[in-house]
Image 1 (cartoon, rainbow, N blue to C red):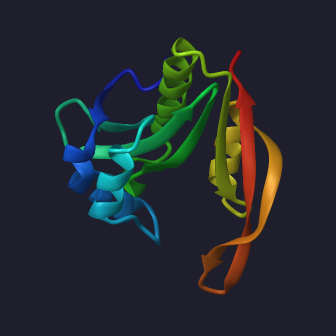
Image 2: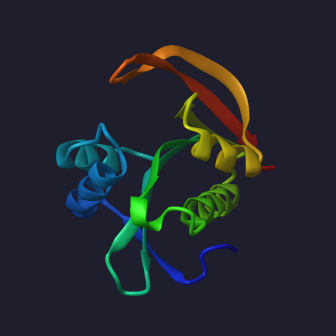
Image 3: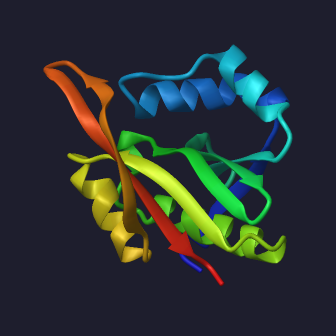
Length: 153
């Protein structure tokens, strides 16, 4: 598995402040502490925080499992840690964990112009299964969200 030099912490509502700070550093539009608390007290919602050894956190993922499906709600890596295979490692961990509980498909959405993320997801076997027109608000207008899915067994 990729990213073996990293440690993974299972996140909970108690980690909402850390998750919100990470999210804020990863994205232009971030989620609040309260939004993370609300999410992480919902049934079937999981989070992982990744850090190098015992250092500060450098990435996160939040995902929800329902029946035989999983949706990745957010995944991010701090700018200084990108291109270290952290996001790929997080995806690998989610897929193993979800397969172990009987999930057969994993979904996520991504802005159609996010080339780095699309390359990662397509390299991991995700394929476009839908589109939300003008879903994301950008500085210069709105952009489509691509819905991607991967069958994991």
